[in-house]
Image 1 (cartoon, rainbow, N blue to C red):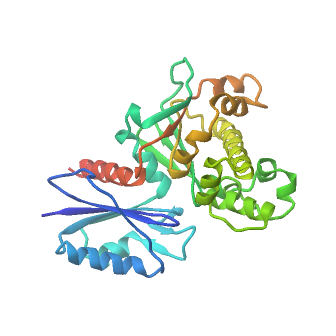
Image 2: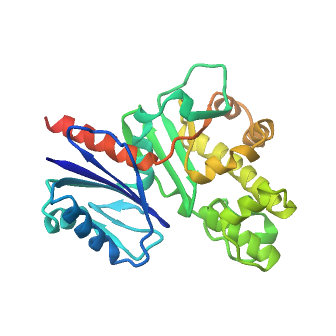
Length: 309
């Protein structure tokens, strides 16, 4: 029996699913934390043995830029080469995707009830492109072009506009060198530490905010404002006529904190016509579906197999 292993290897956790050819859908997802960088090979050896070497296909979503069939992870000292993995584990297929490339390929798996609308223009789409965006350990951005082709980006690692996003006081600390330093879980943890002289995780900041703690609420509200401001700039950069999809666990956590009217006002602020009209025509949705990267890996693998047949 031929099986396919899908892996989403992020900066913090690894999620994976095993599919058979007969049941080519994701029924359950496993989550695992890798403590050491050399544990990926050990994990693959173990899981292949557990499945009696019936795993013939491996598709990985990896947090890092993809160059020449390899990905060097942004938040781990780990470099993954698709051809080397294919040869080492005697696989039929081994495919690697940037994590936000994979998330964009999840689009065919999304339904209307997987979306919460933030901005809903009463106009037709001005093209079929969709921008996927989401803060996490870092910041991910990718563009789905004409609902078929995906362009991953490194927007999170550019430094243009960082001072404007974070403000003069925090910028003066020299702790914010790129955009994902200001819009990410790592970023809000850093802000909390600078302001309160106390290290705390982004998850704990959200817990404090849900309990009504004033400073945690202020940090979350500032994060939402920064997201709206950056999205307005990215809208003019990428022209996502079919909308912006905000994805990932942090965006799902932000749902209960977002004031839609305030968010839209911030999104439209400081942009003049005719470019303002582009923003007004661009829908923005939060994706509530989890494990998008794994669904994207599966969709990508299925499209590759279809092309080969």
